[in-house]
Length: 172
Ligand code: AMP
Image (tube, rainbow, N blue to C red; front, side, top):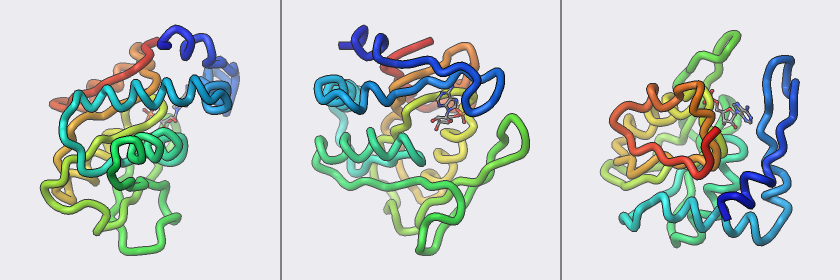
């Protein structure tokens, strides 16, 4: 399954801007067997540990994270770009290649001590996941693992997630 997933990932050169090779997961999402296979592998990254909630990062992390949460029979928590969540939020800013971005989470999304599996489609420089970890830790979550479909290993994003169990289904 891992090789079938790898073959289905489409490299889009120059999106969203020059110099970036965007890993397009659309062909996985659009294929029932591949999508289910990806969710199976995401669930395995939990290593059989008890999970109370799955958190997913805006926006492709929602697609995988919500399906993983359903499969595990637990709730889902969206971590969103600033300005999208309606209730009281805590926020964290992080550096982008140019400028900065902000992620938010509802302040009552996770209770202290809850075990959270964090899910996103891709680990690049790690800034987004690092900011999300800070938010979850502020709420008192215990992060069981941080799971990605794709890791761009050459960008060393893991270095921003010290002490965390970082799992990737596919490495580049
Ligand atoms: P970073 O904070 O640099 O680790 O970037 C991770 C976030 O940006 C993830 O939510 C990804 O969806 C997105 N992202 C970054 N680089 C790429 C890429 N080459 N292809 C697809 N998505 C990417």
